[in-house]
Amino acid sequence: MDQGRGPQAVEAFLDRLSDERRRVEFGELLELSGRVTGEQPELRGPSIVGFGAPHGTAPLQVVVLRKQ
Image (tube, rainbow, N blue to C red; front, side, top):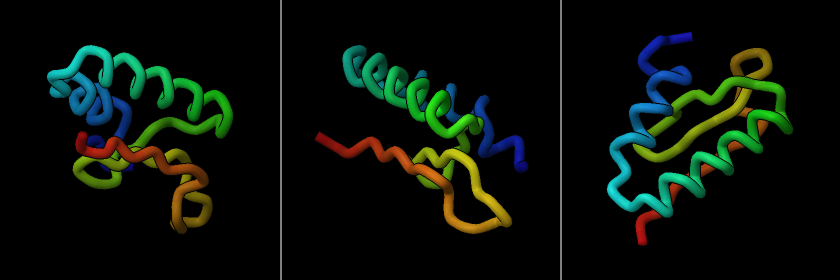
């Protein structure tokens, strides 16, 4: 896995969110998604976090932060 996309990249993405409520709620959603899938988060796009990718295919689950 590319280190620029792994859990550290996801944490950096969360740290850049200016709205505290959005940061906390998106972090909670990511934590829940990780528990459900059993996979580590991976940054897949500017605001797209995926969990797991069996055989290099699409992630098992994707969470997207939308603009307000």
